[in-house]
Image 1 (cartoon, rainbow, N blue to C red):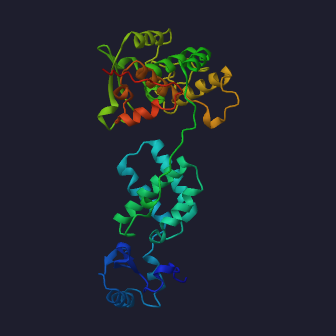
Image 2 (cartoon, rainbow, N blue to C red):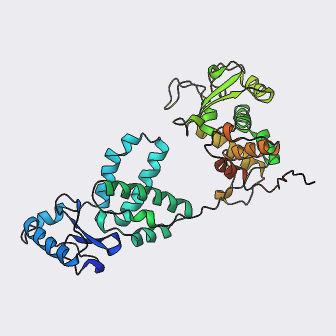
Image 3 (spheres, rainbow, N blue to C red):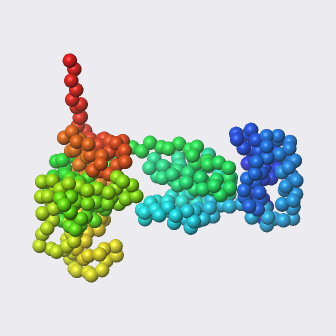
Length: 358
């Protein structure tokens, strides 16, 4: 097996010698360990030292030694999943996103050596995808190559030099009239889920996990799924008249620990990810909302990627609070005001700012 061809810019240099700091200095990559070692700013001295090191570490007849020093993108991605991912305790959805985008990276450059991937290679890959997908691939690539630098597999992170694309929101915002029309077509349990989301601004998964036992001293305690590691994720929501009305409606003749619950078509004692036979999975809430939305006929002809989902109720709720002059940031569990504003943008109505001039 012959050695991999060098890049055109590096061809004048001996094997394993590379320019660093924008060409101002040089570094030698150990052919066995893969670690980089500074070789100073003198080109002549760096070349002489590299030739001497190659003679000692990579004899002409030692083809195996030439190969051992190279780690492919695929091998590094596998190492990352086995060693880095477990330490970070990613949620299932985040880890799945990483795995999906790693497959795209592996398909494009999995057999390339980590050290040989450059900005242009990554830029070409990102150009083939939508802004959202490209940004996810970039996020994963930045992480992968940052770890590669820490492992001594390369001196820099080419993914950081690529551009982050601007994502244009495709989904339509939900108006109050549309909400009311969809609400009327939903079964009672789904209506409860919609109203809880609208009043509390909680995500689908957090609404599905709300329990009666978490209502204490006039407050509904919620640990937000996405932000449970941060202070903004622990909410004690005061139960006002509107929320109290919804909670009372949730207390029907079906005994269940969950606010949002239903009687399934057939009773099953144990289901994957469920601890009670009346429990409603987040996907079921999404499906019930989508079925009522389509039945309403309000969005006939709208492309599928623009159809409002259950998540848009959160944006509508934020808009309602803002319309009343209230700040919904803490209730939404957002760490920054900008994040809350992202949900509030995209509505057609103009919010006039009241000011006084003498």
